[in-house]
Amino acid sequence: MKLSNIITHLIFIVTTVLGSRFPFRRKTGGIALIGDELKQTPFPEWLTAFTGMTQWPGLDPPYIPLDFIDMSKIPDYKPYHQGECDVNPREACSFDCDQCIAHDDVRSCPKLSQTFDDGPSPATLRLLDYLHHKATFFTLGINSVNFPDVYHKIQEKGHLIGSHTWSHAYLPSLSNEGIIAQIQWSVWAMNATGHHTPKWFRPPYGGIDNRVRAITRQFGLQAVLWDHDTFDWSLVSNNPLKTEQEIYNDVAVWKLTENRGIILEHDASRKTVDIAINVLDMLGSDQLAVSGCVNGNDYIRVFN
Ligand SMILES: [Zn+2]
Image (cartoon, rainbow, N blue to C red; front, side, top):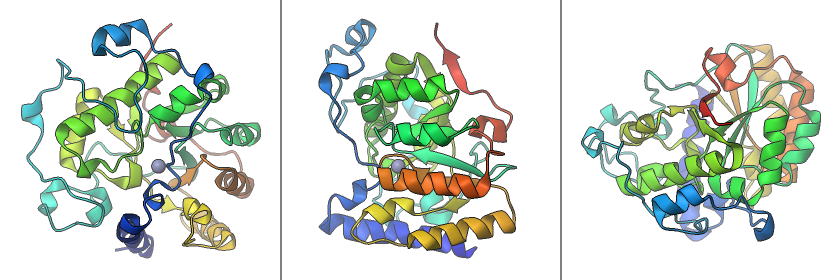
């Protein structure tokens, strides 16, 4: 096991243990921000017809049954919390527990490329000013409907947008219905805000196993993981796991050695955005969006 994998493994355990004592820690980096309600993405009529609701849900979105989801295709693995890695057999193919990658997961890239999770946020705008290549943003549904102007700016600049769930849930801990709710509302947020249906999906905390995959695949989503974790989010927590300088040292090593792969970063706070800009300065713009890493499409569908 590579050292970076071991560190990744440890951090998930650490965040789980501390998460129970410091509830905000588990949301660190993935915090759902409160936007201006007046500027929210309007709740579409088609979604009211479909759900009976008239406004976007809070952090705990309701499960809405969908015709196209075949529950019998979902394997019967048990829900587990972060770090509870002895609950299911290895065949469950957990990324965060065992670094297991499924045949259709994307985990690397021919060019060393940054990816940005947990936005859109007001801080995203600053990052957009510095990006001169097509990059990838994995957005939270709740943030997308609260910051539609930022979402549209990401689109206008030609970047790729993927789903990062509705409200940053650790999916393996949820029931099948709970996982579906996190995915369906994130897809609807992107439909309503960006007029497109996502193809790429990044599980919060790397929390994905074959039960989660059996659901995301039915939405046509493909999971995107990472080879390189900056732990940038921890710098805005009470317990930083790296110094800022150590992050830059890591990036320098990744560039000098393999010079390929997907880097995990975050655009939900000014601090992590400033780090992302410095990393961009180190790597330059010869980077790929995730779709370019694997010669895939950007979206399942784009609506006019
Ligand atoms: Zn996240």
